[in-house]
Length: 590
Image 1 (cartoon, one colour):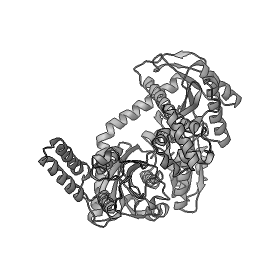
Image 2: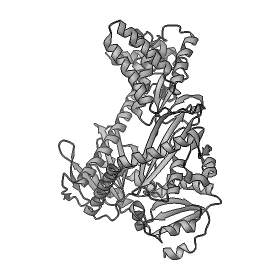
Image 3: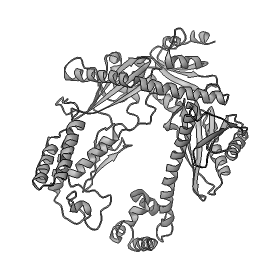
Image 4: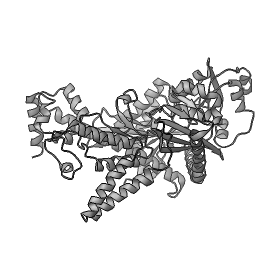
């Protein structure tokens, strides 16, 4: 059947979608010549992930496009839409942290994620910092050295930071704009990769501390200098052209592809990051997909990117899709940087291969064992549910998704339950109905297994809903012991399945239960915090929906509103309303 269908495929650019026996789309790819690419799956031997993919292909479809650019854009959109299990590149939901120097009258330094790409041009954003610890350490260090504003909202009086000389007392003092500009300019100079002024400033402070016999402070300052020299000045690379660029290197071995990305900011190498994935498609396709999807998740684009020689015929394609200058350097410092990225990709794969392969096999084996235990062929997607409430208040549920034994955080979902009662049975019925009615309506992928965090009652609730929706999806429950730890697996017939506590499959189930529990609890805390502020604001005369939304957006928690003085409240609310809120909050604390 597939061979007959292949004969009809044209030698034109386009996208192809692979289906398994259930009709689920398991892989999306693109090709310059569809016939040649599709034929390659069925007329040669494969290994690793590609072999497993081919073994599950029962059917395929294809979409012809008018150009390679259209095919690449379509491929990206189809992957977003269907999230096929074998399109595993950049599935970790990773967004890099950046450092922002705010544009407020009295600036602050913040570590930020999820940057609004449309508005970032009006912000002072620096990075990325693949290591969030490094970003926070850098912000803490600069806040230690420069007396920036530290508070979120301006207090009425100076605080501890002023007395330890880490703030200029912006709330009380009239600080000249020139002084603030000098501070921000030095910080910008540092964040652009120029560390000499900061090192000199620390050395001066260290000398003063030493002469004052404050050796503890001198030691702390010495450690700051070592941090800059060892952690920040990693590689002495400077192209002296002040241009932001990213450099992509790759290396292939033993069925895996290793990507290394260098981030140059202001012409200087400031950070790097690595990604290692099993190979599924052609190497060229993998590299194109990786680069074209790299800037999807709020990762700021530089002015240009440097790419390997293998992409020589695709420079115009990538440049057009990314709206960037894409080049392959042939010589000079840029070529050295590209070669360095390739070498680092090799080192990263060599260093981590055994650990990654071991983890991959252990996870895959555990996932297959779980499928065998429950008599599920090709167990791929598992959806796990948990409920959380406090005496029926702030009733919520969470759902996490595991694909082939690994969490797929793009697919996690939160549910704010309408039935605010301490009733796990009806809570489970509501969340199962909402989840799978929506999948039916949107014709999206169903899981191969549903796991509820509980025993007979939760399983019964899920079974009743699925029966009403005419869906046949296997269900099981994770039963906890009196210490709230994974204890037993209960199947849909309410039988306890004995699983070796030291086995990989038991560890996988424990990880699933911990993941859904932590995800749901974190959501419950958010709702509880938001709910407490909403319930208080609902009691204040003069605060309606619009003002309540403004206060929640501006301050986020009851604690921060309680810290405000009456004058600050009067600056954003009518005097009478501010007075009512201020007095109410004071009464709460008595």
